[in-house]
Image (cartoon, rainbow, N blue to C red):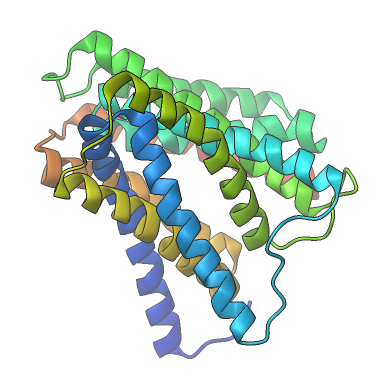
Length: 316
């Protein structure tokens, strides 16, 4: 970790707080988009914006004389990236966009916090990391938290059956993102003989492949429902999710990891559901109740137990 002056430390921590706010608000914005456009059409438009900005970023780096790998090289890299695009873009967006049609933004932002538990447990078959009984205790604690959020949500204006379906889809989105995280780490370690690549390059490449995968689904929705006619609100949501939440916040978060270290930067992720609930209240008039707080505490407790046990097994 780089040594920074107090002023620079403060500014970087402020930037991490802003990233948590942007990612938290994206849940309410995602529900607005999911209710405004057919789900895969909204996801496709979001990723079109994302890819334009990512490749403009690449172009800017190239103009500065920096080496840019526009596309992956090698058959194995393409195979691995296709799998990551399948889970990180196609799978995640299918469950995220459909899930946000049926559940509250605040509820979803709490449930997605379950992701680190899936990540650690999937690291066993994907990365060969050990697991223990304590991890399953953490898993059970997290599931109880999800059950509390789903079963006793204060957002009773959404039918109970819809909330169950939506929350289950968000849980599947979390599972897809956990698989993406582990496969990205495995590719960075070149376990299958993939070409060397940075985290940024892997994200851009699998996002590109995932955008291609989304295209036939968006085309099918267009054939079913006609050409989409996004409102200004829909366009604001697309730009927010595609530009601010995906590209800019990702860049700032990577900067935070570089300046503060992965542990300090990642700690801000636990503020995302807090801003997610507040974003739902602000933009969608959702409700806050003790059950959301209790569910959040249970999920985070399960996550911390699994993470601590994983660290103990790796270092012990």
